[in-house]
Length: 126
Image 1 (tube, rainbow, N blue to C red):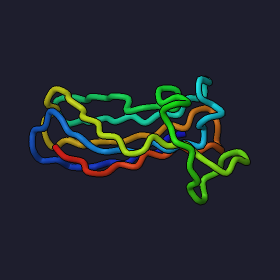
Image 2: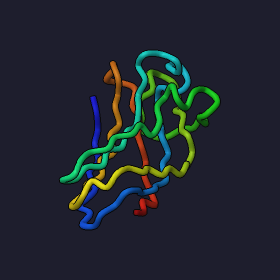
Image 3: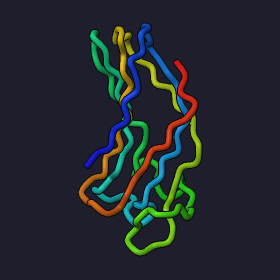
Image 4: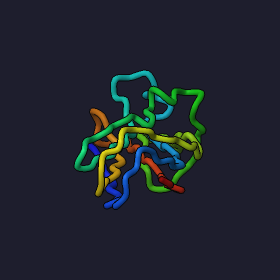
């Protein structure tokens, strides 16, 4: 399953944007390195085209790249913690997609319905 957040329309030509994010997942650390690799993806599209890039994933972050924490009301198969990256900054660069442009953040929950992953986004600038 996937969750999406749409931003736009952006009524100017853009070829990059930056944002801060914190990737949170109940799949840390038990499922790092497994095929059930939850991921966060960003897509920007407009009348001149589309660009998609992976922001991060459980396997990309790995065991050493996340911090164990307790976040209320997230299921984690019986554990009392989740993992998260902490706030990181990311810049996405691409060919101008024209305007109006839209930015879509997608979080994929691969192969299970119980273990949640979340992407928090802040400080978006273009």
